[in-house]
Amino acid sequence: MIAPLDHRTKCLLVQARFSQFSFWNYVDVCKIVGAKYPAAPLGLMTVAALLPQDWTLKLVDENVEPLLDEHFEWADIVCTGGMLPQQQSVLSVIDKAHAHGCRVVVGGPDPTAQPTLYESADYLVQGEGELTIPMLIEDLARGATSGVYASPDRPDMAHAVVPRYDLIRFKDYIQVGVQYSRGCPFNCEFCDIIELYGRKQRTKPPEQVMKELQVLYDLGYRGHIDFVDDNFVGNKRKVKALLPAIRAWSEAHGYPFYFSTEASIEFADDDELLGMMRDVDFRYVFVGIETPDDEVLKQAQKTQNLHRSLTRSLTRIRAHGMIVNAGFIMGFDNETDQTADRMIRCIQDSGICMAMLGMLYALPSTQLTRRLRREGRLLDNGSKQRTNSTDVDQMTSGLNFVTARPRSKILEDYVRVLKYIYDPANYYERIASTALNLRRVDKYRPSFGRILRAARSFLRLCAKTAFRRRTGPLFWRLLVKVLLRNPRAAESAVNLAAMFIHFEKQCRFIVENAGRRLAQIEEHGEELRARTRCEDVRNVRPAEALMLSEAE
Image (cartoon, rainbow, N blue to C red; front, side, top):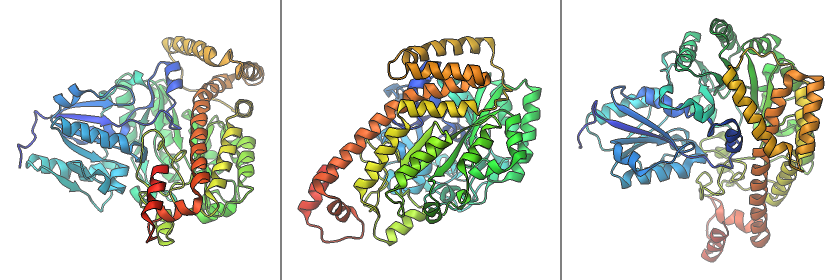
C-alpha cells in the first residue's frame, strides 16, 4: 500500500496524439482559421468531471501542445487513454509517466477492448467511466497501487456530469463536442460501438443537454458544436423532443451555436426531423454509407442502407441546409472487380466532398472479428499497432485478416478510387454540386470580430489555393458560379475548398503507403503472408516467419 490520494492530489490528464495523416486531423485547415486542432478532447473533459473536484486538474492535449517533463514532475497521478489510432501514443505516455515516478490510469475504447496491451498501466478503467471511475477513486483512497475496474452495467445518461470545459482553451479548436446519447439500435457486423455501448440507445434528457450548452455559453464559447453521438437519430422519438428544446434555448440566447453530428441515413426519409434539425442550424452530418452494393451491405448486416437511392436521400438532406460527409469501406468478402467503379460513381454522383474511404478493419470484440477468428482468417496482432508512422487509422492499416479477394486487387482498387475522388477537378465538381443544391438557413450569426477573422482566413486560403496552378482556376470558377447561383452557400463552398488542402496531402500519404504494401506483396507473395500471420495456422518454418516480419 502507498499513501492514499487526497484533496492535495495533482492529476494530469493527457490526450494522446493522433497522426497528422488521420482523416479527421486537418491541422493545415486549422492553421488557416487560427486554431491548432479540429476537436476538443471531450472524453478527458468528462473524465475530469468524474474525478474528485477538490483535486487540482491539468489537461494537456498532445495534439495542440507538447507534453513536457515538467508536466509529469508536477503530477501525482496521470490519466490517459483513447482509441485504436492513439494506441502507440498512449503507451508512450505510460512509459514517460513511469519514468518520472507517476502512477498511471488508462481507459477508453482501446484499453477496454484490448486490456492486455495496456498491462504496463497501474490502473485499468474499462467500460463507461460513470460506473468504473468511482470504483477507482475508492481504491485510490485506500492506497491501492494497482487495479482493474469494470462493470457489466451501463450508466443512466440522465445522471451524466457536465464535462470540465474550463480545462481547455477554446481558441485551440475548431469545434467543441457535446454528447447526447450512447449506443446504436443497428447491428452492423464490423461496428464496435454496439459492443462497447450496446444496441439500446441511452440518451440525456433535454434539460441536461441545455445545462451543458449553458455552461459553454457562460464560459464564452461561440460557434461550432458537434454532437459526438455515433447515431444522433437512433431514437427519433427522443431526438424530436430534444430539438425543440435546443431551438427554444438557442432563440433565447441569440443562436450562439451551430451544430454537426453523425446519423444513420434513414433520417433523410423524415421531413419533420429534417426540418427540426434545420431550425436549430445543423450544418454538417456524417453518414456511414460504406458501399453502394446491396449484396455487400447484406453480408455486413447494414440493413438500414439497403434498397435506397443515395442521391435522392442526400438531396433531401442538402435541401434542409446540411452538408453530408460520409464513410466508405473497401475490402468486404463479396466485393467484385466492379466494386471500385461503383464506389467512384456513388461518391461522384452523390456530390459527397468529404468522403472517408477506408479499408475494412476487424476491430476487437466485433461480430466481424469473431467470425474471422472462427474461419481462421484473423491475422496475429491484428489490432496491435506496429508504428506511429504508418498505422494511422483504417485508411492505412485495414485488412488485418486474410481477404476473400486478392489483397493486391483490393489495394489497387483502393488506390484507384482515392486518386479519382481526390483529383482536384473531381473534388471541385462535387463542391459545386453540393453548394448549388444547399439551402442554408443560417441562425447563428458571428460577431464582428469573428467576421474579421474569417476574412483573414479567406486571404490565407487564397494564398494556399487560389493562386496555385493545380487548384487556382478551379477555385475561382467555383466561387463565381456559387456567388451567382446560390450566394448563401458561398461560405460552405469555401470551407470545402479549404478541406482539399488536407485531403490532397492525406491522399498522397495513403497512396504511397499502399504502394509500399503492394511492393511487399509482389516481393513475398500473398499466400505466404496469409499463412504466416494467421492465428490458427501451425508449423510455419521460422525462416518464412522472419522474412515476413522484416517485410512488415
